[in-house]
Length: 137
Image (cartoon, rainbow, N blue to C red; front, top):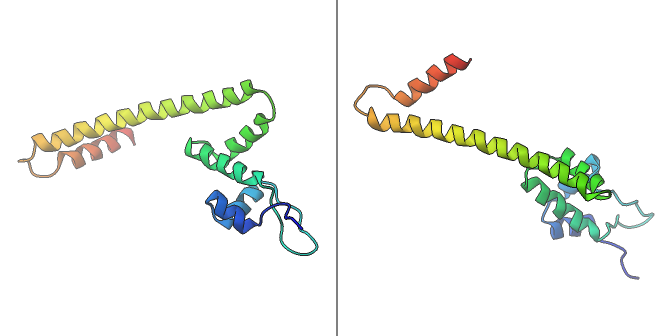
């Protein structure tokens, strides 16, 4: 008799995740749990591999699990809805990049102060960070 699917262990190996990840995705509603047969193991449909790979790729792009659930539901509808969600995520990423650029420049400036004030006692970088914390906090 041919199998109608794969076991959780096989699914985990093929999708490069651990079994607990699969169970977590099931609890979160990202992956459907197959019915338990009277005898034997639960068998997952082969397309479960693609679903898990989709989830992992979306996470690498910065989507949260809640956003991924939304994408999965939207994927059954129109492309414009999915595009709208993706554009919102892109906007957040661009904002984060802008913030990171500012943080980078500030840190570069502070490191430069360390280089130019090496003969001074103490570290201007630490002093500057303490001043900035006091100013903002």
